[in-house]
Amino acid sequence: MIRWGQVFDRWCFVVDGVQQEVVVSGALTANGADVVHSWVLAGRGIGIKASWDIQTDLEDGRLVELLAPYSHDQMNLYAVYASRNHLPQRIRMFIDFISSGIQNLGDSA
Image (cartoon, rainbow, N blue to C red; front, side, top):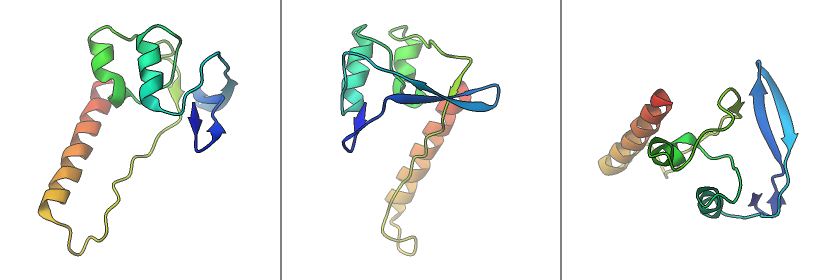
């Protein structure tokens, strides 16, 4: 995976409470998560994806989890908006909806 011109060729895992890095390589490199997702679905290799992003693929049997005993490093997701002082109700409701949906995915994993 390439982000901002940097190749991410190390995957971080937590094994028995200790973070470990694994150097990965392959014939394919992409700068978009959607491309990686399509390659994995097509059987072109393995990848690391957020569980909420592939939950339906896992439930429908299109993907299988290979490294279940090992957790990947945590990913933070942020909602960025101009000000809390005058936050429109529709934005607050959207943030609450997304937060609830992601929390529910985490609970089902």
